[in-house]
Length: 316
Image (cartoon, rainbow, N blue to C red; front, side):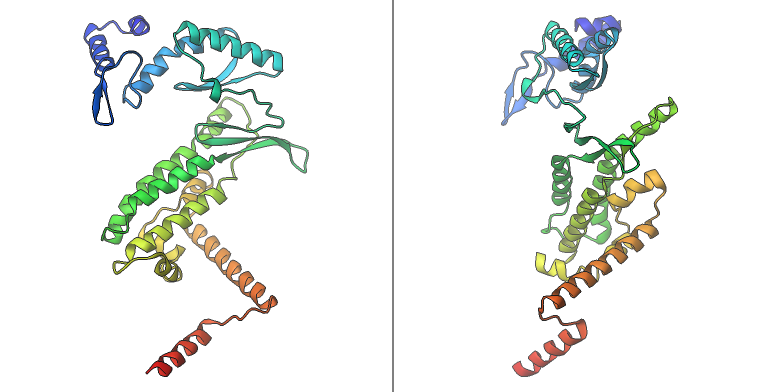
């Protein structure tokens, strides 16, 4: 409240914030009083954290330390080991003066020439050198973030519900759009830096595999949900030919892989469908050739149809 008094003169606003801080919280169905700090998950907590930690920002700026901060998560940068140890000591001192503790279990020193690090759902892979001799690094979504993405898709596609195709898409499209737009923050940062003349050496074309796995999972969940009569995973796989990539794009499903690269390179949905369709054909062809080379029995659709008809005749 002392920090807020520096910037806010309106007493009614300060009283409202104070009441919010002292409102308490619910834990396991029981009311608990707020002793100190801001409520975890409270809608006002992020802005209060930013206002409070402005004190840290100004001290780091005054000391000439490069940093990135998002609420209570921050990175410090330096060119030598001595400088980064000094920066860490300054940050710790400022935070202790603010009555805060550094989470040492989440704090580590990283040499970006050989070590990776994770930040806000992204994993930053260390510097490497291309065949042309240019240094670069790349970024991918953290594995935990992709699992959370799929978990949200699963929660939105409960197979016990009987909904129309439009309703299913209305459930999953906002999740896909929201998560993909979050992943685009790295691209937005690179573009923003270009306006200030800072050329980035960050490779942003490494999201494809992770986003493709999410799209495959989403289509499989939708196939499972759209079978209204006894849905199960075996039938869902059987529908993969009928309800393929092209089909879902036509009915309005937003593929995260397409949306990500569309924002950066104007990648059209037609290009996406064509690429995925040809890739699936090549994969099927390669699998068929592998089976034949190994001497495994392989039957095409026509042969399988004849076999099934013969079985029906034998049973009648």
